[in-house]
Image (cartoon, rainbow, N blue to C red; front, side, top):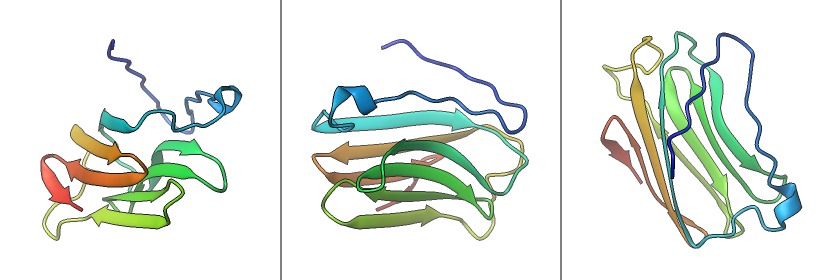
Length: 114
């Protein structure tokens, strides 16, 4: 698939409405990969879903937070190393894998949490 790039300078955001497609999570396996750079300690990086099933990646206190509920219960993970922050205005790579309705892994700059 082609790489899609977006740049935001403040409170802008990008939306992609999946509501007309029925189940927002139609595949059995996904990988979300994105780069970001920011000076803000808190902010939404990615969100899809509704109140019952959702997939959320955000910056909280300079760390990357993942919150997911795909029908099999809520899952939360956070990468916030003691000597590194992700709000340092440098490029960072986020990778999240999912199989079926379970999160497989969360990586930020190749640092892993499960």
